[in-house]
Length: 472
Ligand SMILES: *Cc1c(COP(=O)(O)O)cnc(C)c1O
Image (tube, helix red, strand yellow):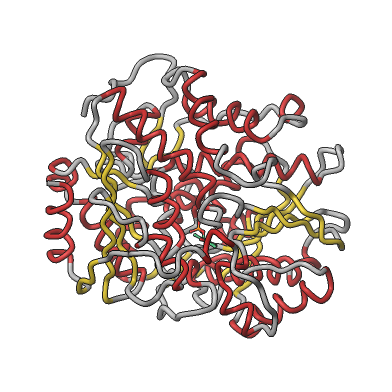
């Protein structure tokens, strides 16, 4: 690849599995997954400047934090320009505003981007970043990703109209909401391929992971990752943990808890990195729906596959969470050999367990609750009745988990609930909760527009044939 080899002054990234070379930011970003099948993590954590960052507006805070992870590789004015491009498309001047609900609960609204989910916060930045890499290094950019609904829409909108970029997104056929489907399929362009797979999200993710793991295919097509296996995405999400913290800590610098509706463990891992940078996060509250592999891990130490069940929060209907490997790497003492052994065991038996001091560490890092379908709808109603605020079903899982774990926090610790989607995006669940919402204009306009997608079986070879036609 034509991206520059590692130089001094670059930020260094290493693979969790320890068998791939170090990479700078651009090489890490373009590779997505490391060549040994591991995930990139920073070789050293940059330190937060809590005093210096407190008063900064969102975009400037983003520039400071992202610059720490980019090192000297991207000129400051490039980072500035890309951030301008990214957050100019948000409809709220604060980008990610914080709304106090009462009872020490706050909502961090992450849905003011073009596709109304938090995925825009990272992908509106990643799109132009790919554009910059294509221009600067003449890199071929063929993006491949799997989505449970929101990533695909945000990724397609992040790169729409950028020259030289092709994008293919796999989604589970009929298992994303109509609005999500239309957000993806109404971007009708020869550079965009929507593959609807007869299967669930894990099937889509497996096909994509499999193609990235096949280095011959990855190189032949210059495949680029848009899923949160790409650490650049997570880096962009670290910013709002700091931004929200400064809005709710009352200037005291005390601990704050964050409740995160979790699927692939990307968003919450950004919070974990913020904490490792020095942000006083009391604990991260890991909220799942009925697909609760991660909740079982936090509360019992058992990480074992279950059946995937459809819920009102489809973006969290996930069994194998890609980013979990990153957390496990830190939990196992940043020891790649131990991590490799754990991953091999999981692959073989579908199960992995921690106990003793390791489990105690997990429970210092996280609290967790699995929120069942009924409780999700009840929470939408409850938050509406009590606070006059409407949350989407994903956010409702986060609020329910925050309320259920309140007794486990020291008194007076504020809790920020990440609102990961606009409620209008999941209108059906809102209706089932007995409430109403008008479709936001960004969605209402999609119905009746021309749209295009290709339906395929849950089959790697069929996917590959379609990808070959797109990427050429
Ligand atoms: C993607 C998504 C999630 C899950 O985020 P992860 O980073 O995969 O854990 C939660 N809520 C919504 C609305 C999403 O789109």
